[in-house]
Length: 249
Ligand SMILES: Nc1ncnc2c1ncn2[C@@H]1O[C@H](COP(=O)(O)OP(=O)(O)OP(=O)(O)O)[C@@H](O)[C@H]1O
Image 1 (tube, rainbow, N blue to C red):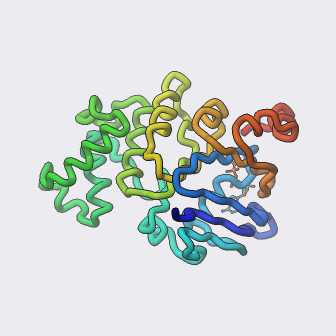
Image 2 (image 1 turned 120 degrees about the horizontal axis):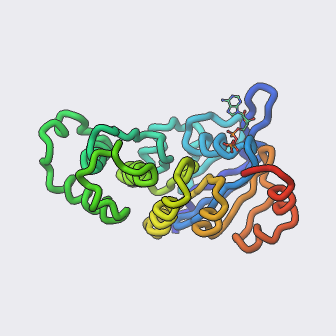
Image 3 (image 1 turned 180 degrees about the vertical axis):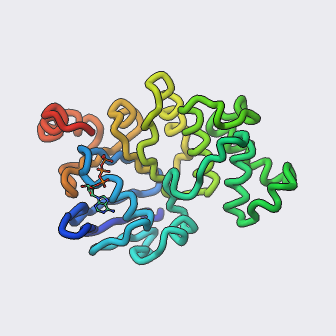
């Protein structure tokens, strides 16, 4: 059993502002953990520290026993730590299949030249088919992305991130901007993710969080207020005060 992601004493300051304050956090393989907290609590900053977009002021990040604190973003993606929108961008004028082909080829570092030869490599095509199957995207395969519903576009982004074959997947507000009638697309997709993938979800939509997370971490002003199962978090008086007290998140 590998240990996955292990964060210890992680701090980040922007000038005089302490945004992450000595965070301890574990994300083992197969985890389904959510990070919640009010606006400005430091959730995105934490995700950016884990993916290497920001360098920590102090503390350590280990992945399967190796210290990755000083590793850049590209090296961490190569290790398997990926965040939606980090690497992939949708090509809205292309079809779903073409977008996924680009993502797979990008991972394989073969890039646009091969893509221009269109539908070539059977292994690549099989991988695209598997990704579409996983996220129930087959019916949309030959539709141009810009004509899809927003929730469906988010699924294509998720599929493109999965094309990187991550072992740690950070979903930064996967339901942001998705109309309520399409949120089920996102929750269904998260529930169908591979069992051994470690997933961290940063999300304001509490219905989604409570449906997909098995563990919830509550961040307030750069510190972990508490961590527990959805049932524990829902009944925690401090958390209730935080949310019912007028803070959103
Ligand atoms: N690059 C930066 N430079 C300076 N301050 C920053 C930077 N990035 C974030 N901050 C500040 O750090 C604090 C935490 O921001 P962060 O975006 O991590 O919070 P969040 O919990 O993700 O908020 P939200 O829920 O609104 O997305 C905020 O006060 C923000 O203004």
